[in-house]
Length: 182
Image 1: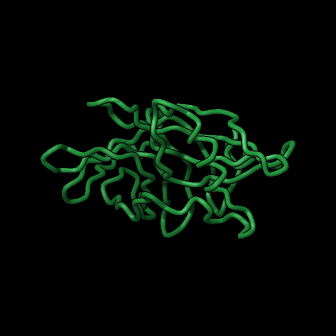
Image 2 (image 1 turned 45 degrees about the vertical axis):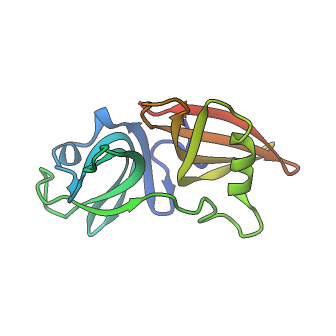
Image 3 (image 1 turned 120 degrees about the vertical axis):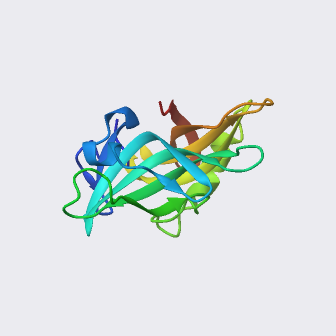
């Protein structure tokens, strides 16, 4: 699969897009204990990495908060493993990305969030919450890709992550695919 028109091993904003399930994490990241006060992180998808002071890794995680109801959300998490650390023992969470504006990194004259909202509002039985805009690729029109948190509309349902791809041709958005992350 492609993210933002870039296949596995490509780059997007300085990120090397890997796009694999969290069951196949790099060894240093797999051994890292991801936690912040009051929250437990369960990686479900490995988006990619970025060489900075060590290596940044971007994951899509299910986050369980230590609340009375053990609230769960799906979010993008950036983890840094410092240079010279090979076992993940010094890994730190750099950023948790929730509810960001989907038009980040998109030309200002294109209202991508409006297009996603229009397409997803037509679907019934599942609610979608934007997590991370991934990019676009030119096709017949333009395809836009984003990570979303999905939640079935019935009591007790658990959120899960999806990749949503839409096509916009002549200002008419249509759904291309919704792929569940597992």
